[in-house]
Length: 154
Image 1: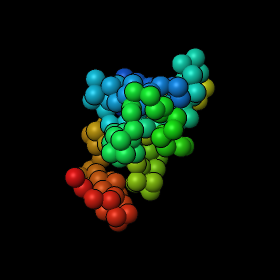
Image 2: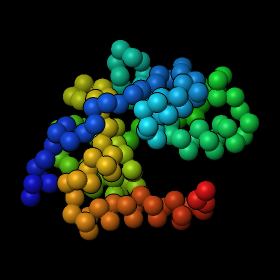
Image 3: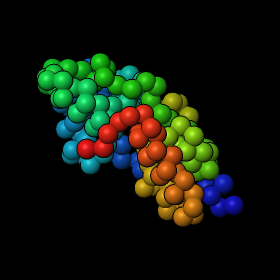
Image 4: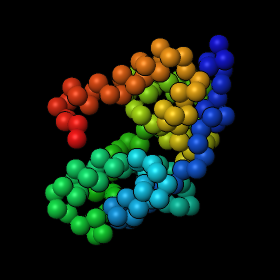
């Protein structure tokens, strides 16, 4: 019952870094390395902080570096995923868990009542509040689609 009432804002990681559409892929990769995160939300501007997409390490490697493109000149807007997977900070952990499991997300970017990025909720933050069985189902839902779509592990 506790899990169904606990709010996302109570457990999310508020230390989220962002890029704007005009940022280079190298800028995003640098933030991922510096802050040890696998993806970065792309916001429409530093003033609004409204998410318009996100870019992951996978996009950087597979869609830019492996194709011989220069990450110092290519923009994140060319390679970002849209829409950005988000959840509202006043929603419950249970609703976030269901969204992560159904949509196969490892993390959700959290937005406040103004639609601004205010944090991130990943499997690390949510796992402390899940039973072993629910965590196993979440991990299975995240990992299985990767294999079924013909993507190979490195």
